[in-house]
Length: 120
Image (tube, rainbow, N blue to C red; front, side):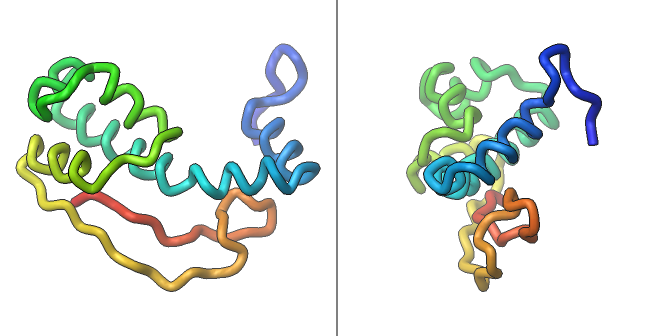
């Protein structure tokens, strides 16, 4: 576990504590989880290709702010947007349905990783 920050807790520790205390907070974490996974994959692809958000935006035909929103993990991207991102990297977009494991979120203290959508 990471060392406490200057105010006593890491962001991850504070988030876990809040999720344990608030079902609403946990529900929001669960809702955002697939978007965060997509964001991580887009960031990884962009970094692997040494592209800035601006350069990726040009490839996709959108704005830097749209790429920033996508990479924030707080917004639901459309399939069309994900298809454009995949095409920008000469990749195929792959969407699949996995069997859900209980609990639904890997963020739960006792939970396991849940399957997620991914780009190829």
